[in-house]
Length: 204
Image (cartoon, rainbow, N blue to C red; front, side):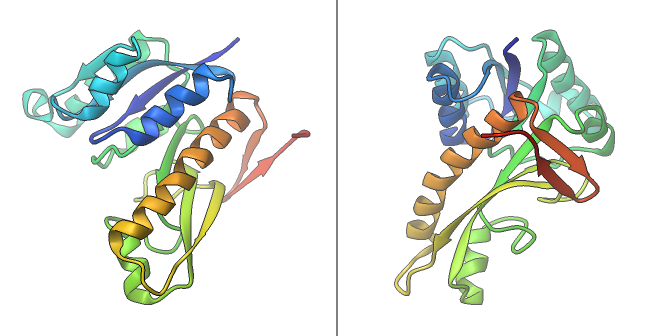
């Protein structure tokens, strides 16, 4: 049975679009059941509506507390029968109870080869440190910031003339591929968490 996927996004929603396209093309055995944003005018919500997917805005201000905000999001996800949660540029840190509730079925993507350069503007951090290879990471979300067991990493060579923008765009191309691949493995039941490691089981 296809997995119901809930996507949390705050911005443009390019990774959301990759997930929508991956689902429609059979890239993994799942469907996007709902998209939730903490920003009422997030382009990600427009992408969802254009694809005929329920798009829900949850206001942190109206919720009041962080816990109430997170419980409102969880209520939306549960109401749509969500099995898997994808964080796709969701610019909020989620609290311990939310992470525990969705542990082992909530994915995050980050534009760096974790554990290097967690946090904001990872691409700029990579350029400032002069690394020769950067990339992206899809991992299970835990209570840390850009932490949790790593599922997939895709490398991107850093050019001598790269700017924040040019490196970000090349990494983004790989993010789209990596998220779909991680979802394929998860939806196929091929991921096992063993401590800090993720083991991919079965044949490809």
